[in-house]
Image (cartoon, rainbow over all chains, first blue to last red; front, side, top):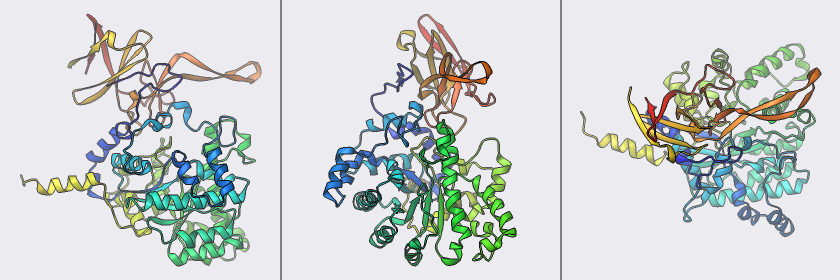
Length: 413
Length: 121
C-alpha cells in the first residue's frame, strides 16, 4: 500500500479511513495472545455523538431548545474556546481528522458499526460507551440545557444503540447540576437494556455529599447499579487557567477533579451511608490512588474528628472501590506500577478500559503483557471483574466464537 | 540477509511512504528530501503502525536573552515520524524516539539502483 502524506502540516491524503486497517496490529495482538479464550470488557470507551447530534436533538422535549440545538450543534469550539483546546494533537493521531471519512453500511446505526469494528480489532467483547463532547455539558452554565441534553442523549442511546447491540452497554450521564433530575434519570432509565450504571462527569462543581443527592444514591444502591465518576478537564477551572499547554491541563485536570470527589466521598462517610453502593473511578489512570490513600490516611489519624462517620482508614474504603485502568502510567516505573496494583487490590478492583478512540488509548496488551500478573489476574482485570461488578451476561465477539468453533472442529493431531 | 525490491523510484514521491511485507515483517520506506529510510512499521510503545502516520518537524520553544519565552517554531531540519495511534515521535533519520533514544524503530538499509528502491532485511 502507498500512503501520500503530502503536506506534512495537514493530514494524510488517503481518501478513506478504515478502523480495522488502522487497528490491524491490535488484531494481530489479540490473535497471538489468545484473547478468544476469555472475555474482555472495556469499561471506558467513547463514540463521537456529534455525528448523530441531529438525531439526538430530536429527542429534546422543549421545542425551542430543540431548534437551538439543531442549529448550533454540539461540536467543541475552536482553538480559542475554553474546551476547544488542541486535544487532537494537530492531526498527529490520524483517527481524529479521518474518522468522518469511514464508510459504514446504511442498514445498521453507524455508531454500532464503528464500535464493533474497533472492538473486534482489539479483541474486546463488550464495551461500556460514553459520549465525547457531551461529557462537557457538565460545565454548561445553563442547568436546564444540561438536563435536557442529558435526557435526550440517554433516550437516544437506549433507543438506537443499546437496544440493538447486546455487546454495548453504558453508564448513563447524570445531570449533576440538577439533583432532582438525577433521581428522575435513574428511575426512568435504570431498567433499560444495556444500562449498567450511571455516571457523573467529574468537572461538575457540586459537592457529591450534598443532601440533595442522597435520594439518587439510595435509588442506585437499591437497584445495585454502580455510580461512576468519569474524569474530564476544563480549561475554565481557576487552576487550569494558569496552564498554557494541553499536556498540563490534561495530566492534572483528569486526576484533580476525581481527587476532589473521592475526598468528599470518603471524608463525608458516603461508603458508610451507602455501604452497598459501588463506585467506579474512571479515566484518571492509577498513580493518583496510592498518593491519595497515603495522604488521607496520614491526616485521618490526626483529624478523625473531621470524618467521624469513618470506621476504618480512608485507604480501606478506597481499596473496596473500582478503578478503570486507562491511561495507565507505564513509562519506566514497573516497580511503582506493581506496588500500585497491590495497593488497590487490582486482582479484584481494577477494570480494563481503552478510552478508544481518544489519543491516549490503551490496548488490552497493556494489561496482558504485565510480567507481575498471572494469567488469572490478567483475565480478571481484562473482563472478569467487570462481569461480576456489572452482572454482565457475556456476549463474545463473533470472530472469537468462530475461532473457537474452528478449533473444536479441527481433527486432533 | 535478503534484499527486497520495493518499487520504482518514480513511484515514491517526495514525502510519501510505501509499506510492504518482507520476511514476515511490515516495513515502511519513506522518501524525505531525496533520501530513503526504511523502518519496521511497528511502534515499540503499544505496537502501532508507526510508518502510517504523519511526518511533522520538531517543535521548538524559542528562548531569548534572560530566559524570556519568545514563541514557538518548527525545526524543519529535524523531521519526525509520528505514530498514528498515540503520537509517539521518532527522528526520521535515525528512528530513535525524540524523548528516549533507547526506544527505537527497527531500521533497515535502503539502496537505490537502476531506477529501483531495495531494502535489505
